[in-house]
Length: 509
Image (cartoon, one colour):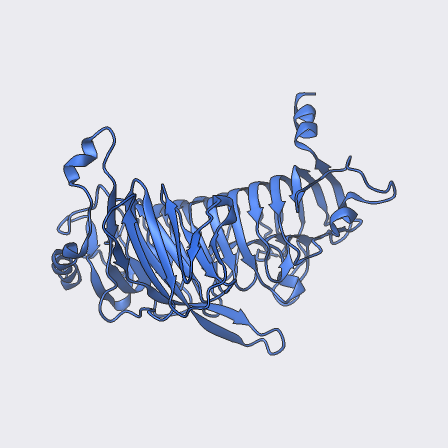
């Protein structure tokens, strides 16, 4: 681990200098004094893409203004990638895509023009937001009354789409000369030696309009923070932000272009409103190994491997994984799973993955040709892992390209495992909905009588508008899983499908 950095480094000096220039590009529709008013005036803050950073001007022109009649501001659009796997050759192609961001308060009107033309339809996702854009020719308009991260799709384009990220206006940005802050101001920066090791108690701040090239590591650090509106662009495929044997780390608001954020033996962490885009090999968005007490809140992930992966031991990292929460998320997996739990563990000294909460999640896409790695939400116990005490609630799955809605397995995948998993137990799924036609049958597969799936309860499972319940109308000889073309084998014990009323009655009986 490197020694603590001084605030007098040339890197911070460059950031502070860039800040003065960058502030001239901020657009505000009201004075800061208005913030103290009972009803603050609308405000809009935009950030230019620094010189030397790739932009995409051939797909979208984006403008935004405070509603109803503020001055239009044009957003710079970042170039990014999105991956597609060829199922015949296994090769991956990276397609061009787009990202833009801004901050606001009040209500804003957004105008997106598809520069390539030929627009016949437009969609703003997640669908659960209920945004129906006004479309006139190649230009669409819609409003936001609070910050939300959305995807704008034209003519159902999967890759040539706009990822539009929004934040609240920032009120308490740190000072560039604060001795406890490692400050990157607006502009393009490169971390010397490629890796920034963050000491305990320090804050790394990426100002809006900053693009930082390199990796940020919290290695055995405590009570440190990474925050800001800026963008981190790692040089390598794996390891944008790393929490290694760290405690009480907070990462908030930053955008990761080209890699994700990983936890290894971390204890106590908040990852809030972090946006992750990956398109390389092993492009997991938010991987976690042998960690506990970690909350992911409000994150947006589009990934070229699992968007969320939750494991126990692998490599040099050991220990149980417990008390992990994923909430208020939007996930898009171009490869593998939106959420994958299990797989890796310690066959010699078995571990537990327990107390998981997955709540209020929109899953926009899932594409995985290999059956072993399908499932929008996958619980797959291998390597003598035991997965238990999982609650999945208020998850909305839009139609996806290729895969399963759910896959729960106790497995021994010899490519990645050294032993069979011990089991999957005590899983409660409430208010899970899927709307679409592309889902393959979901699979629930215990390994044998000693390595089973036990106690799985669905409450208010809705598939294409139909509530799936054991008491629903169906042929008397049907399993409930037959009504949705799912399959559970003989090593799945005590699987139930309840309506909300039945669940409430059971809770009070």
